[in-house]
Length: 431
Ligand code: HAM
Image (tube, rainbow, N blue to C red; front, side):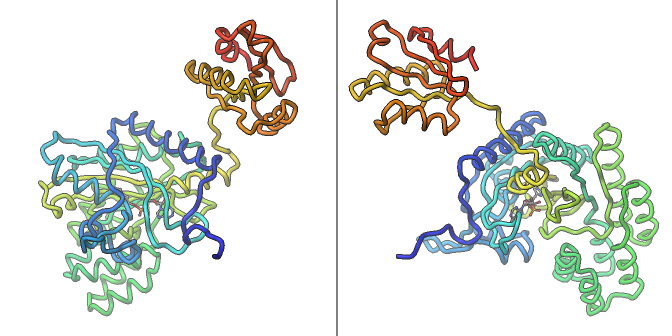
């Protein structure tokens, strides 16, 4: 039989990476608490119809789709938003609004594997349901910035736009929704020429395609000024003007909040997912050409799933990519150095006593490992040292007779004989 390897695009997380993932996840959970988002856990497998309703062609074509044994079309979740919207349309439909919900877990997309792009990856996801106010949009931007800071990422920047600017033009020009969606997909991939070519084929007026060509190059960090330039350009399109006004309100609120988010407004910015109706954004790190998070406003999804019309805004962050960013900037995400303890009996007959000592330590809240390879003392100490264990607790006959053990600090090579009832206290106050 050939050697087994993980499936392409899937990875093992060895202890150090697993610790890092859980630590970043912990920070995401902390941000959720700080902003009042309650955690929910949703299934990894969902009905394909639910997931595909407004996912957009790109995400739809990359789903891990299969028939379960009952013949149902199901897929591994390619995002959390559909699951949360399903809940708000059904079980949570009568909950008072706003609803702030948080999820974290694995996500599956059949993307082409490369650095920072996997087929199984982790997201932290925040959805704010029930408010159409720009404060809600500002909150989602601010919590995303807070997560990047909490995680320890530096130099992250936000790209922001409003899907209503382009959609407003295309709708007024009566461009069919399917073509609009295809144009957005191309814009998302920055294939602006192809997007314009597609519009030309659908025979929209020349002045409209040239307006779109002008828009896609407009971007800048003087955000309100850029927004005003966009507004002047789209003045003949009522919905587009409203979209820019809305974006300006969001930008104004973020600025008033005192939160120093590095923002660039991009007029031609679009996202692959089709459910967006308002402000959209992505988070990037200048020297890495991948998004660390993305989100926006989607006011019609819950209604589409049969729920009450519920405006909503949300974001998801790629935890694997945050880890990659931390590694790149050499700010290793290390949890606090923990003391580690290895309990070693001096002879086989004392194994039961060693088990008892280890258990007493754990009951006092001190993680303890037991020497279970029946190594001789010298060898056991050598192995403990190699593993960077802080203390060896040596269980010997003579000391046990006096109700004590020997505690050895492996890096300092010092040791004390300590009574068993004082062992935990001793370990807690020594380093
Ligand atoms: P998304 O932009 O598709 O948005 O994904 C969010 C983040 O997931 C990306 O910015 C990226 O960090 C990470 N990500 C995506 N694909 C991969 C991959 N193949 N490998 C590693 N990381 C990846 C959403 O998923 C929306 N549901 C966000 C949202 C929530 N919008 C409203 N509410």
